[in-house]
Amino acid sequence: MTVLQTITTYLSAERNGCVLPKALVKVVAKYLVDVVEIEDVKEVKDKALMETAKDAWTEEKSSDLPAIHRDALTRWLAAPSVQHEVSAVSSRPGGGGEGTITEDEEKLFGDAGPTMRERAMLMSDKTKMGISGLRILMLSTALELGRVPTGGQAVASIYGSDPRLSDMVKAARKASMQTLTKVLEGGDVAKLGHFMMSLVRDYSEQGMIIEAQLITAWWTETQSVCGASWSMMAKYVRMYLDKYVGRGLPETVDLVLLNRLGGSGGGEMVEAAAEALKMAKDAKARADRATEEAGALKSQLATLRNELAKLKAKEGGNPGGPSTGGAFKGTCNICGQFGHRARECPNKDAVKDKDKDTPKDGDDK
Image (spheres, rainbow, N blue to C red):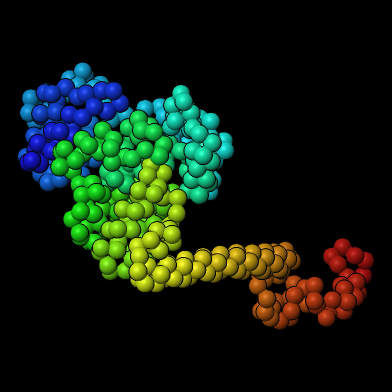
């Protein structure tokens, strides 16, 4: 399938209950390939697509993009109202916790609702990852797709269901788009790393930092415990995704899965993973202590600065006094001698007595 066909398939897909007009798809796809020189559908960015469509239509038809096409593209690009709920979820740890459990159940489990086991699993996953159930479902789909889906696309699935069987992922495979399953079949560690980091960038660009951090931590630890063994890494990733299907990334490293990989190597990997996790925890503890110490030093420095400012203000408040310490280099206003201030004048009394004895103009002699 050519790049033009792939982009045409991508733009022809239904999103948010809307399908773009064929004339618009044809013009935009041709413009992206011929003018923008897109070589991969992943280079198509939704945020720039409206302006691209306007430029493409002007280039092809020598007229402005018709309102009917502009409105259709706006609906196609827009995330549904549920996406706003996704963005509003608190970013603190446990931010998708108890406050949204009922709403999540309605969206993710349908009218039948979850079983007690599914409900407990959802609560646990939300607590571990710090995001809502909807965002966890989006993360599960994004891991297979290699890009962030909209809230409406993700919520079409059921929590815990296999994203590889979703219509969205099937459409991506049909359009020859790269998916995680295809990357794992290819046997290329570098390509897998690029796939993960590309997804991290997509999440970061959309301001969903928690997910970006979850993927980064998970991928870093996976590389750490699997080493340079592609076969071990591919098996572990597949086993992980099968165990936590439709549940995002609730565990950074699963020691049970590593042990199942078999043989003496499995035990060695478990030990290595445990050691890696211990080192990570120790590093975090050290970082936390360093942060606390830095905060204490900063507080002490602020106190010293305040004390210094008070001293300077006190010195600066004396009439005729200098703003800083040191010997006085002026002339006394009382006796006229150099080297001391008027308030420190040793000749003060003598000058006063002299003034009393000296007759003033108009006095009787």
